[in-house]
Length: 123
Length: 470
Image 1 (spheres, rainbow over the protein chains, first blue to last red):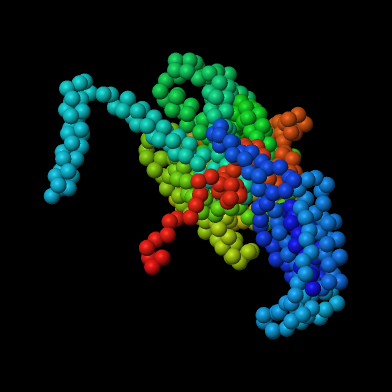
Image 2: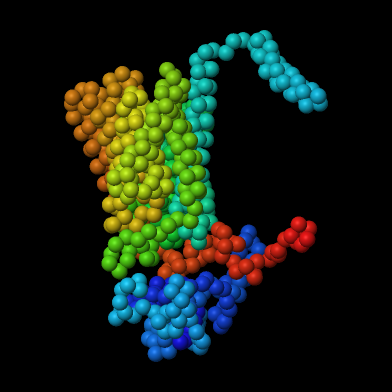
């Protein structure tokens, strides 16, 4: 089991979400985050006085999948999040020790993503 | 004890204020009753002009509430700059074209309005000035309506350019034909448009339609399947406050169009206006029950505005009983109109329906419901179909609607087309994503929502209290 953590632009989220759904990965968590990297900040002006923000808003997308599915998810993120300009974001892969579905108490890969070939009773 | 003394002192002071001028006046020669009447008329027209000015606040709140939070500040800059520009343009040129004489096509006097200067063969006096400022507020309302379809994606530079053309040519031309004794006065006994369902609202909405066609929809408005998606505005209470301010302003908008207090016609017009607005809300609620099955807050607001737009032209011509019917049909039209138009063009606040379709309906409604008593009193047109059984007046009303739409659409489309080809009409994709506040104005309307919390200056947690630490 692996967790894919992707920091992406806001506008990249919708196509990634759509394609992950089509591929059978509906289970994701999304957080709005602010961060800094090589992308530069912006300066605002309020009646002549300025304020500069170095932290830029990004979307943080988390998705836990079976080890064999990591490539599929990462490819989807890279495909839609890349504009070629500084500030496209990053993807990290983290190991996950165990997972439980709270409703049933099941554990392991059973609790992960709903694949297209899985039966619809899980939905 | 001290408080009662204070109250007594205040009452005595107020009484003294009332008594002293009266006793001083009693010694002067009596003022001719005609002068008092003229001053009373001017007072009402100026109060009404102030109410119509307040509608700018209504439009600002309505549009800002229907926009996303990233475009909130832009709405304020837009309203203020547009109002300022059309103020100057109307004073210099617009008023002259609209009201400087009763020629068939345009007025030919009253440029750079000033007391004593010739306006349509008469030297301008206090009454002319009241008329000048009241009619200006109408021009400004019409211009404010134009931008309703353009929210969240138009370039700031388009405002001043279009405001000049609209304030100098487009609106004055239509105002001259409809209000100034021009073209529409030559159709039969004249086209009935008491306060401007066509002249003000259809004109604004038609220009808005032209702008919307050239701008295109906001990013993401239409899904890959071509179906419209909701882009929710950020503050429904602001929308509601905007609608209520517009409703209040409309009492001046229609009520002031009596241009005086004679025969208490203004009281009748204000009452009829309120009945029309009430009908609009109820019409929208009924239409929502038939279509969405949910009482959409924005749509109910649109219903109130559509009722008010619809009753604007008939407000001086119809009896009380007709007003709720006219408003109700306006409310029905706006809901079905918004749902249909949303499939074709991206009109974020429904200006083309609330001001356009309801404006057309209001103008036609005169040709149906105008009562003989009021037609005679106003002295324009003939009684409507309901009373006369004749389609004649309805036909003239329809002709006026077609002319207003065609002329305003051509002139506005041309102006926006030139803006698009020269300075550009629409911001870049990236600027649209970031919002007009930061990309056009360099600041946020809600800084605390957009500036990252760690970078806000002077913020910290409150000190701990005794209760919480015990």
